[in-house]
Amino acid sequence: MNVAEFKASLSGAAPAPQSPAPLAALWWAAKGDWDQAHRIAQDDSSTEAAWVHAYLHRAEGDLGNAGYWYRRASKPVADGPVEAEWEQIASTLLGSPRT
Image (cartoon, rainbow, N blue to C red; front, side, top):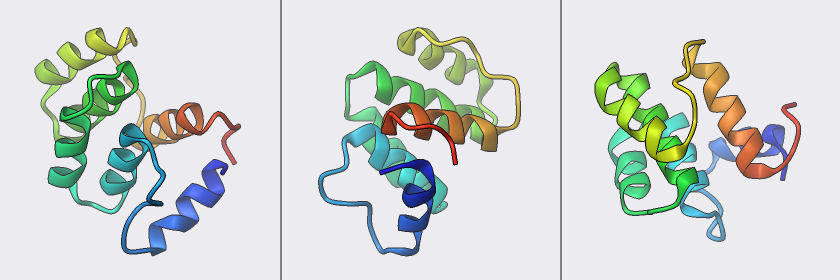
């Protein structure tokens, strides 16, 4: 799946059942369900989930908490538009170029 296909899946009721937790959290974030996205990201101990967790707190404006999660993810604090960060995370998690 590439980013375009992932975006197209947002018309569904839930992410694909085989989606890894960080990707599922990113999917729920794009659907506007921050709480569901946060629960999923928080319950996964991977660095990928920490990156999504950082993104979620940055998107809500909690920059202090976001900074903690960026450090846990070993990622620099993002400073561009949150939409661009979502795309970057999705592309990385999917292992595909942004389209």
